[in-house]
Image (tube, rainbow, N blue to C red):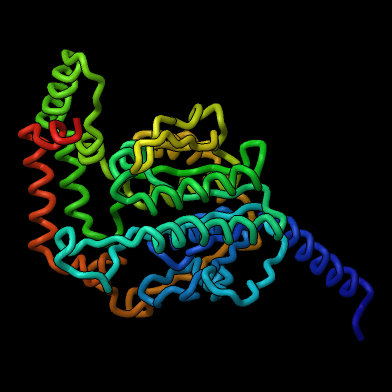
Length: 372
């Protein structure tokens, strides 16, 4: 016969479990099975959050799984689909890792060294899909929306050639700014993202080069020469190419910290302006909370890391002690999420030739001369 004390103990445990579960901070991660999204999911789980990933592929392959994977709810849904979206439970925040700058593989490979871009597709996949994600998050009660864009220097470099891409990013920022007032919209602006198994040695070598004394002298010398000119001009190709890349783990941590409300306006200042479209007409961005470039992302990462660590130290319903061996994960591809399946990128000679031509143009001043 069950004693009255055991009944009370059972009810106490049940109530405590319900309270702990209901108190968990809930975050939806759009594109959570991707290169950046997986890291965002892992960081949020380790911080004690309930995490829902929404992507076209659902759960990531086993070789990308770890102890946190089973604690994420992996939902399959294509934001480009006309079908009814899944009904999200009540969430506190959302992170969108959706973005695409891949060339159109169906276009003539002789165009632009095989790199042909479809502005309509870029606008849809970087703008409309993120708008759909923001509206889904708002309907589910989210008060914060975190969105991945690009750094100011990269945006200035590609605002003309990749008009659809930048128009889409700007549209997504505008929607997030309207739906999530009071600085509820936070935009991260990385440059080149590397790390994990996505060409890690190339990323480290490139970063070492652009931060080397030789590169700094070269860039500084060009800046000094430009100041002597009566014409006002900026070499945004040079600025972007000499911007240090950022590690994917830094981006994942800052996105997670922003979702937890740890990234504030007074940490970053106002959104930079000065953009133009391909017709030379000025365009204005909304004044969202914008973390711009590698140095800012790394600075915010340092500032917020202790707060996130404190959250991880607290007892959480998501605490996990399970482990997974490399044998359980299966065989991981040699290059994590890098270029696989994107035919135009698999032609190394034209791509290398293109970047060599850009570099030569910068050194010789021909690129700047043609622009002005």
